[in-house]
Image (cartoon, rainbow, N blue to C red; front, side, top):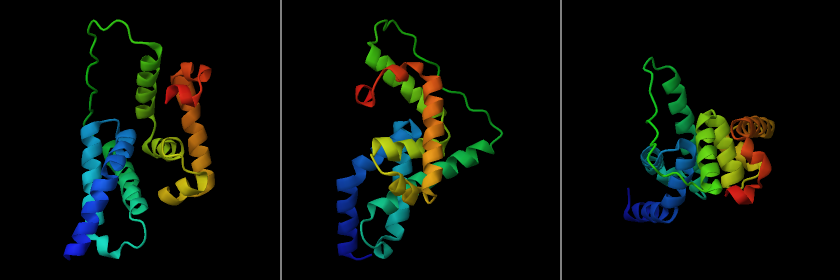
Length: 171
Protein backbone atom coordinates (compact mmCIF):
# COMPACT_ATOMS: atom_id res chain seq x y z
CA UNK A 1 0.00 0.00 0.00
CA UNK A 2 1.10 3.53 -0.60
CA UNK A 3 2.16 5.93 2.13
CA UNK A 4 -0.98 8.06 1.68
CA UNK A 5 -3.31 5.07 2.11
CA UNK A 6 -1.42 3.94 5.21
CA UNK A 7 -1.55 7.47 6.62
CA UNK A 8 -5.28 7.67 5.91
CA UNK A 9 -5.90 4.30 7.59
CA UNK A 10 -3.77 5.25 10.59
CA UNK A 11 -5.65 8.54 10.98
CA UNK A 12 -8.97 6.68 10.85
CA UNK A 13 -7.84 4.21 13.54
CA UNK A 14 -6.57 6.98 15.81
CA UNK A 15 -9.73 9.04 15.32
CA UNK A 16 -12.44 6.34 15.41
CA UNK A 17 -10.73 3.45 17.23
CA UNK A 18 -12.03 4.30 20.72
CA UNK A 19 -15.61 4.62 19.43
CA UNK A 20 -15.31 1.27 17.67
CA UNK A 21 -14.05 -0.38 20.86
CA UNK A 22 -17.01 1.07 22.82
CA UNK A 23 -19.46 -0.40 20.32
CA UNK A 24 -17.63 -3.73 20.33
CA UNK A 25 -17.72 -3.75 24.14
CA UNK A 26 -21.47 -3.21 24.06
CA UNK A 27 -21.74 -6.17 21.69
CA UNK A 28 -19.45 -8.52 23.61
CA UNK A 29 -19.58 -7.42 27.23
CA UNK A 30 -15.85 -8.01 27.62
CA UNK A 31 -13.06 -5.47 27.06
CA UNK A 32 -10.48 -7.93 25.73
CA UNK A 33 -12.95 -9.62 23.39
CA UNK A 34 -14.06 -6.19 22.19
CA UNK A 35 -10.49 -5.15 21.44
CA UNK A 36 -9.91 -8.42 19.57
CA UNK A 37 -13.11 -7.92 17.58
CA UNK A 38 -12.05 -4.39 16.58
CA UNK A 39 -8.55 -5.55 15.69
CA UNK A 40 -9.89 -8.25 13.37
CA UNK A 41 -12.37 -5.82 11.79
CA UNK A 42 -9.62 -3.25 11.20
CA UNK A 43 -7.35 -5.91 9.68
CA UNK A 44 -10.12 -6.90 7.26
CA UNK A 45 -10.79 -3.26 6.42
CA UNK A 46 -7.08 -2.54 5.90
CA UNK A 47 -6.86 -5.31 3.31
CA UNK A 48 -9.62 -3.60 1.33
CA UNK A 49 -8.87 0.01 2.28
CA UNK A 50 -8.10 1.23 -1.23
CA UNK A 51 -11.49 -0.08 -2.46
CA UNK A 52 -13.60 1.50 0.30
CA UNK A 53 -15.37 4.54 -1.08
CA UNK A 54 -16.79 7.29 1.09
CA UNK A 55 -16.87 7.09 4.86
CA UNK A 56 -15.13 3.87 5.98
CA UNK A 57 -16.73 3.74 9.42
CA UNK A 58 -20.03 2.11 8.36
CA UNK A 59 -18.01 -0.52 6.49
CA UNK A 60 -15.89 -1.29 9.57
CA UNK A 61 -18.93 -1.33 11.88
CA UNK A 62 -20.69 -3.78 9.61
CA UNK A 63 -17.63 -6.05 9.82
CA UNK A 64 -17.87 -5.77 13.64
CA UNK A 65 -21.53 -6.74 13.75
CA UNK A 66 -21.20 -9.55 11.22
CA UNK A 67 -18.10 -11.00 12.90
CA UNK A 68 -19.81 -10.97 16.29
CA UNK A 69 -22.89 -12.76 14.94
CA UNK A 70 -20.66 -15.29 13.15
CA UNK A 71 -18.72 -15.91 16.38
CA UNK A 72 -21.97 -16.56 18.24
CA UNK A 73 -23.07 -19.03 15.57
CA UNK A 74 -19.75 -20.87 15.75
CA UNK A 75 -19.99 -21.02 19.53
CA UNK A 76 -23.45 -22.58 19.38
CA UNK A 77 -21.97 -25.52 17.45
CA UNK A 78 -19.24 -26.20 20.00
CA UNK A 79 -19.66 -29.17 22.28
CA UNK A 80 -17.63 -27.61 25.07
CA UNK A 81 -19.66 -25.95 27.79
CA UNK A 82 -18.11 -22.66 28.89
CA UNK A 83 -18.75 -21.47 32.42
CA UNK A 84 -18.94 -17.83 33.45
CA UNK A 85 -16.55 -16.39 36.01
CA UNK A 86 -17.68 -16.78 39.57
CA UNK A 87 -19.10 -13.56 40.99
CA UNK A 88 -17.04 -11.65 43.52
CA UNK A 89 -18.96 -11.73 46.78
CA UNK A 90 -16.55 -9.52 48.68
CA UNK A 91 -17.69 -7.25 51.45
CA UNK A 92 -18.82 -4.39 49.19
CA UNK A 93 -22.26 -4.31 50.72
CA UNK A 94 -23.50 -0.92 49.57
CA UNK A 95 -23.94 -0.55 45.82
CA UNK A 96 -26.16 2.39 45.16
CA UNK A 97 -29.31 1.74 43.16
CA UNK A 98 -27.98 3.18 39.85
CA UNK A 99 -24.90 0.99 39.89
CA UNK A 100 -26.91 -2.11 40.72
CA UNK A 101 -29.38 -1.30 37.94
CA UNK A 102 -26.59 -0.79 35.39
CA UNK A 103 -24.95 -4.07 36.37
CA UNK A 104 -28.27 -5.90 36.12
CA UNK A 105 -28.88 -4.33 32.70
CA UNK A 106 -25.40 -5.32 31.53
CA UNK A 107 -25.96 -8.92 32.60
CA UNK A 108 -29.37 -8.97 30.93
CA UNK A 109 -27.90 -7.58 27.70
CA UNK A 110 -25.36 -10.38 27.64
CA UNK A 111 -28.19 -12.94 27.66
CA UNK A 112 -29.71 -11.54 24.47
CA UNK A 113 -28.91 -13.16 21.14
CA UNK A 114 -26.18 -11.25 19.26
CA UNK A 115 -28.56 -9.94 16.58
CA UNK A 116 -30.91 -8.45 19.19
CA UNK A 117 -27.97 -6.99 21.09
CA UNK A 118 -26.62 -5.47 17.85
CA UNK A 119 -30.02 -3.90 17.15
CA UNK A 120 -30.15 -2.37 20.64
CA UNK A 121 -26.58 -1.06 20.38
CA UNK A 122 -27.26 0.56 17.03
CA UNK A 123 -30.69 1.95 17.94
CA UNK A 124 -30.11 3.17 21.48
CA UNK A 125 -26.37 3.45 22.11
CA UNK A 126 -25.55 4.90 18.69
CA UNK A 127 -28.98 6.57 18.33
CA UNK A 128 -29.52 5.35 14.77
CA UNK A 129 -32.86 5.21 13.01
CA UNK A 130 -34.58 1.95 12.13
CA UNK A 131 -33.60 2.42 8.49
CA UNK A 132 -29.94 3.11 9.32
CA UNK A 133 -29.83 0.09 11.59
CA UNK A 134 -31.36 -2.08 8.88
CA UNK A 135 -28.78 -0.84 6.37
CA UNK A 136 -25.87 -1.60 8.72
CA UNK A 137 -27.13 -5.08 9.56
CA UNK A 138 -28.25 -5.87 6.02
CA UNK A 139 -31.86 -6.63 6.88
CA UNK A 140 -35.29 -5.03 6.52
CA UNK A 141 -36.57 -2.23 8.78
CA UNK A 142 -39.37 -4.53 9.96
CA UNK A 143 -36.80 -7.03 11.17
CA UNK A 144 -35.04 -4.29 13.14
CA UNK A 145 -38.32 -3.20 14.74
CA UNK A 146 -39.33 -6.73 15.69
CA UNK A 147 -35.86 -7.59 17.04
CA UNK A 148 -35.82 -4.39 19.11
CA UNK A 149 -39.30 -5.09 20.48
CA UNK A 150 -38.36 -8.66 21.43
CA UNK A 151 -35.10 -7.55 23.02
CA UNK A 152 -36.75 -4.78 25.04
CA UNK A 153 -39.52 -7.14 26.18
CA UNK A 154 -36.93 -9.66 27.35
CA UNK A 155 -34.98 -6.92 29.17
CA UNK A 156 -38.16 -5.82 30.94
CA UNK A 157 -38.70 -9.38 32.15
CA UNK A 158 -35.07 -9.89 33.20
CA UNK A 159 -34.72 -6.47 34.87
CA UNK A 160 -38.17 -5.42 36.13
CA UNK A 161 -36.67 -2.31 37.75
CA UNK A 162 -36.28 -0.85 34.25
CA UNK A 163 -40.03 -0.32 34.08
CA UNK A 164 -39.75 2.32 36.80
CA UNK A 165 -36.95 4.44 35.28
CA UNK A 166 -36.35 6.45 32.13
CA UNK A 167 -33.54 5.79 29.67
CA UNK A 168 -31.75 8.96 30.81
CA UNK A 169 -31.59 7.64 34.37
CA UNK A 170 -29.97 4.37 33.26
CA UNK A 171 -27.50 5.96 30.86
